[in-house]
Length: 320
Image: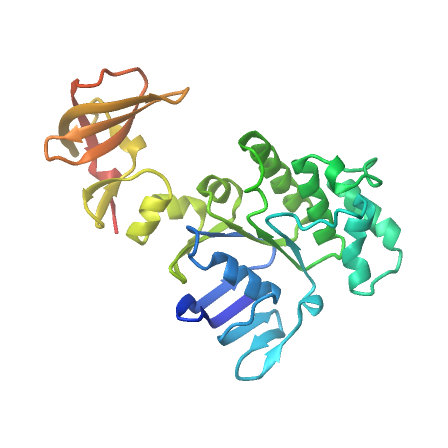
C-alpha cells in the first residue's frame, strides 16, 4: 500500500511548518526526509504518525483515509498500525527489555501469544539473552535495538524513524546504520526516516526527499539528488559544490582534473589556500584568479601558496 499526502499544511502560530505538501511513498521503499533543522521534516513525520494534526489536506494509506480536513477524519495513532522509533528511544526505565518491547502489543490490546511474538522481535534485533535487562544496563546501540524491536513487534505496515542515530557516537552510528539497513531489507517493511545527516540519507535510502522551509525541493534517488540537483539549496546541502555560475552551473570536486584529457575542457588557474589530509586523498581549496574559492581532490600533498592549473570537462558541468 502506498502513502499519499495531498495539500498537507501546518502552522504553529505565525510560523509555517509545512506548506501544501504533495507526496506519494511506495510500499517497501526506504524513504528519507532530509533537510536542516526547522525545515519541517519531523513535523511531517509526526503528521504521518498521527501525533500532529494538519491544518489542511488529506492523508491516505492505501484505500484508508487517515486524515481529511474536509471529511473531518482523523484516525488516532493506535489505529494507524505504524511503528515509530524516536530520537531519544523513549524506553521505560523501570521496564525490562522484554516488557519494553511488549508494551506496544499490550497498549493496543493485542495480547495473543505476546511473549512468543516479543521474543521473536528481540531475536530479530539480536538481543536474545538480554530480555531481562533494564535500559540503563544497555549500551546506546542496544537501547536503539530495543526501540526498533518495540516498533516492529506489532507487525506495522510502516515504520517511522525520527533521527534515531543522532545520540550515538560516530563509530556506533556507522555500525547501527549497516545493521538497520540489513534489518529493513530482511523484514521488508516500508520505512520513512528523518535525518539532517546527508551520509545517512545517501547510504541508506531508496529515495530522498529534500526539504527546506516547509516545502519539498526534490524527491529522487540518492544518485539523482547528488548528480542532478534541481535546486541550488540541494546542490549545496548534499556534497561539496563548485559554482561556475552562482545558482546556475556547478561541478563537483571529484570532477576537477589536474591533467588535461580532452579538448572540451575548461581551464582554470589559482593559488592553493588549504590542504587537508583525508586518508585516501587530500582536500584542496584553491582561490581562482577570478576570486572564487573551489574545492578539489588531489592524490598527493600540495603546498599552500602554490600556483596550480586544473581542468573541468563540460560533460561534468550540471546546469540547474
